[in-house]
Length: 431
Image 1 (cartoon, rainbow, N blue to C red):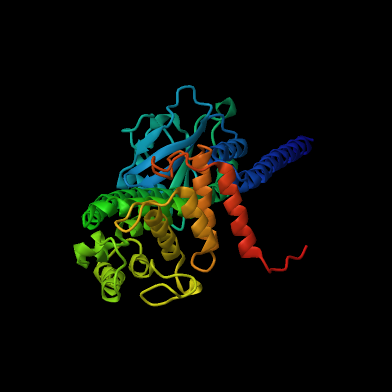
Image 2 (image 1 turned 45 degrees about the vertical axis):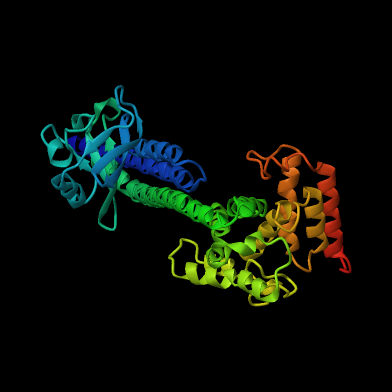
């Protein structure tokens, strides 16, 4: 009878234990099912971190927990999300010594801490006391520490046992993957940001240096003073209207400042001549493209096409330009843009042999010469910027004050329509 009663108690104990284990297993599976969508969801990582922490707490029965990410320069744990702790800094930070990192990496899984073990795994030099934590789950990928899940008290102040530790180990594999992905993304973002800052600084240096060069080029004659700066501004504006990225626009601006650098070798008297250049004089003037190409080819610029632009900014779509007689498809797009910007400024500026041409007259002539001389898409971008000025939608005016307001938006629309008609005439459109 006594044996029978003992057997019944044992059976009930086993059934209760199995039932409890089943509940724990079910809780772990539920946490895992919640964790998958949380990790793969397209949202900000702090929200993902909260979901991951909730899953860890659900599986382990913790009512206090913190999820840390690890960075190695300096070696530091920084909290991504915390829950349950009454006084937890945001962010909580814990510096780690090499011995702490080694201890966390050496652990085969989650660690239950007693009152004297905290200093073996965590430093007390941060802004949070390690004694708050009762269980640590190192987050590791390929033998490298990527983070740490630190659990505080459990429900009812119960101890963490093998079932909770197994559940944590299972989920921490997935949390570690998500955290590693975030760390890599942050590292990449940081590197990109640093590169952009360096590039911005580099661009600033080049802008200052190249503007000085441009001033030296344009001082050849008062009638072309400021020409290179204007070509740089017009070219950059055209590039922006064509949807080019910031680096391509910077390249256009730099090329505009340098496009006439070969003119330093041209006799100053040719710039002041009020009559047509004779063949020898024209050849000397035209050679500024070749000489400029030779000058800039020996300079290491951030933008590799600047020598080509300097050489080919006087090439024209029909092959009538110089120095190589290239046709449209042979001329790089940046060189086509500089070529148009150069022509636009030359026509709207006073020269010794003629007065400046009005904005409307210049644009009409450019449209008339397109597509024989100029790229229609580049001309259309020029018209876009002029129209933006006409309706005051440009944050920075595209045109100089001497031309501002001299053309209505409807006039620009008429020119754009004429250009569209010219470039589409004779084509067959299917619908």
